[in-house]
Length: 411
Image (cartoon, rainbow, N blue to C red; front, side):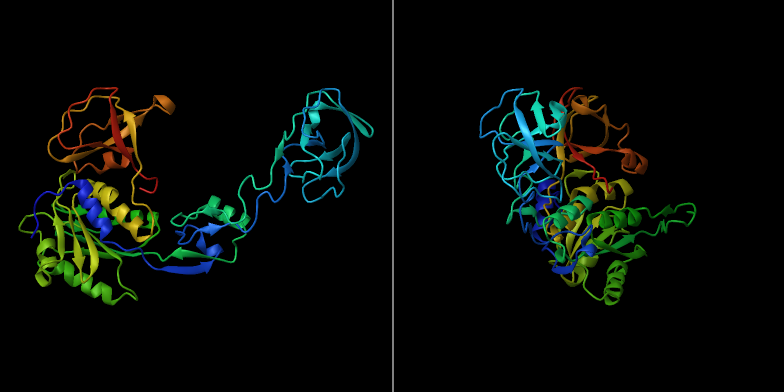
């Protein structure tokens, strides 16, 4: 049974390598919102389909050269969005045009209406005219055959609008929502809403995990709380899987992953299959007792029972695992910020400090929250990011740069 402390990067790579993206399904356009796109969306046509005016004014012909102020033009028609001028513009002629109107044949510039003196059917421009000014060329936004939304993209309101504009409105191919089992182990746990008696603790982990799973675009299945007894966890998994119409894609457990006499996850996994455990324990704080393996061929990620440890490990390992199932990049949003306060040197475990941003814009800095005890869920809730302190990192002072993992909005 592997028990050595595994480096964080190696553990994450092992988890993601063991996962295969779930199958795809083709669904109606309207049902695809918030789903994960499985195939690229390719534009059916150019946008804009022709050169259009970017402003209200007059379309004119410059013949490719800058025209001086006081140039005069005869107004011979009008062009507006949805209303074309069908003639061909000649030098010395102008067409009244409105924003979005197709630029007439022969025109190669638009003069702003506020830069024109209009007299009945003629205009005199008061500013020099440059060729192509205030014209949006055909295909400025995208062109026919161009990939406008890549596979792996979550289809929010902006992406749905772009898909519609590009001509893809019949149906879309998306990833099936992964089915994620969530199970907590612990004699001390009671469900949310149950006042804890002395020695008991409300099970906040399942609440956190369920919402984190949904935020990724997967379906959580609550399996409740099991006692700290040998076989209790795997018995519950067996019964729950039998109730589902399809196999679980991933199992998330909390608790039972440590080495105490009441922790049975590792031994339960290996009871029937000695090779079921991929690794146990990682060189990380918080979250050392993390397990990854499989139960009856289903990947299982065993998170620590401590609420903050479970939350940090879900952020570092669980979210990338679900993204991998959805065919998305597993890379976290890690950026560099200057410290607002000093941090001490680190030991042999990679540390994730709950932190908040100070200030905004280019002067933004990052400050670790006070005490970093892994039982302090409020501090985790207040945090904006996790400062990453590699093993044996030296002490740093205010102003030194540190990498930080940005906590996703869905968390």
